[in-house]
Picture 1 (cartoon, rainbow, N blue to C red):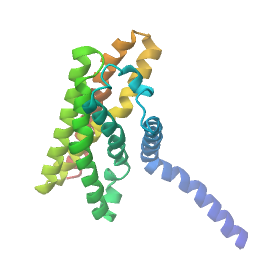
Picture 2: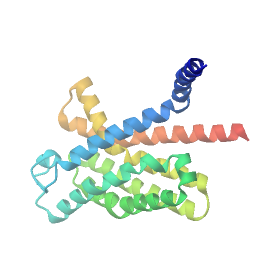
Picture 3: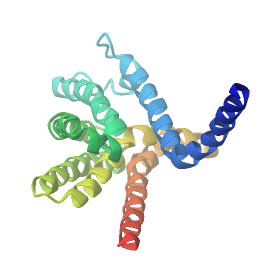
Length: 232
């Protein structure tokens, strides 16, 4: 009898695994990728501790790193943008929001103040001094402005009780947060595929790094609305 129960337990466990993967597989994959790329971003950030002006990205910014406001903007952006990126682990989980509403609000406030007061404005300053001329400068400055704007709209929506609109604008805002990751992926992909001039890579990735993120976010929003309308 005990052996029979043990066999039933094993069979149930074997059957349960595919069911769990089918139900949560996409979430596990997405969170796994987010965790991996967050670790890569953290590894990049740690290169600047202790504060150094001649490592990593700053090697190609020696023409402006002597400017006090640029140094402040750069290190502010580097050390605060990670907070916004990490918010994605909780803020888009329906289960987490329902069970931990107060924590959802607290983390949301951290995200809001991080983007609007620190990472966004400092990114705008860095965008003004971006490599690649007016093409890259326009891309990064527009990215910073939209990042701040979408986040402000998202908070305004939730303050007026429009949870659905709040979620959509936060999806757009976080899509821009992820540009820190996708920018680097596009740079790598373009170099491997075409081997163009380095500055041409930078100009192209400056736009692709966030514009396509917004396209994906809009597709997700349309799909979300379609499912909602179909269930009504």
